[in-house]
Amino acid sequence: MATRQLSTLGGHPEGFAATMRADRWWVAPASTVFGLLAFAVYVTWAAFQGEHYYASPYLSPLYSPVIYLDPSAAGAAPLWHVWFKGPWPAWWPDWLPRSPAFFILVFPGVFRFTCYYYRKAYYRSFTASPPACAVSPGATGRAYRGETAWLIFQNLHRYTMYFAVAFIFILTFDALAAFFHDGRFGIGVGTVVLLLNAVLLGAYTFGCHSLRHLVGGHDDCMSCGKATLRLKLWRGSSALNVNHMKFAWASLIWVGLTDLYVRLVSMGVIHDLNTWGH
Ligand code: FES
Image 1 (cartoon, rainbow, N blue to C red):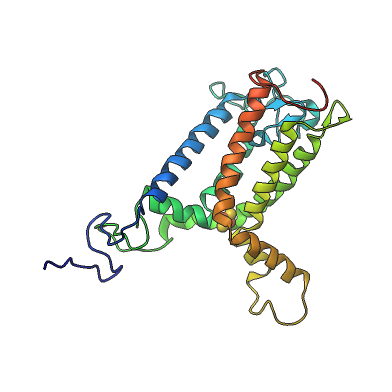
Image 2: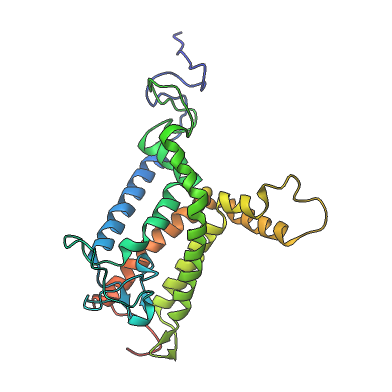
């Protein structure tokens, strides 16, 4: 009987995508390619619109916080939402739409891109190195060097984490502001959509490996001594961290759907059911 040669490193047969696994291991990396590409295309498209990102009292999370505002844009946010109330920056190039999203998306973008979970996902799905556990990456021609050389930029994660935490407070404020239309308290479908968006993004961000390390993970013994605030924070972050992958996907999909909902309401394509009666 013929025997297949096994890699001395991974215990799998040699050759690209060779494996002894009998399950459909390729579903996860293939879904990741589709999901991440679809999200990247939608967010890029939405950022380039520069309009219809606000439908009172709902502000799209892809445009929050609003650093500068072009009030002449259709579906623009009201002035009280804007951080710098002056005119649009004169240095802005004419060929680029006046979109407030361009000022902010780099922070959550880099935070997501360097997330420990997403690294695993796109290393597997886009570079197939390796495509899955016990599946051969084939002949790469180069020894594995870890996240050294240019990949060291992944360390930006621990810095963008601070911005990501700040964004959670901002988006929570937006969700609370979505309870008030023209100064009147109420609730609409959009309020629930924005609230759920803040919750999911919070669950993703507060379960971040870097944040978990920051609040207590670097201590040698978290269970020694009496329970401290640090221990409680670490336990809370750990509880969220267990489902980090699920929150990563749920929050990614929901933030895109939230923008889509606000956009469609702003454009008049759909009507928001609410207690304000507008
Ligand atoms: S590790 Fe995923 S957000 Fe930090």
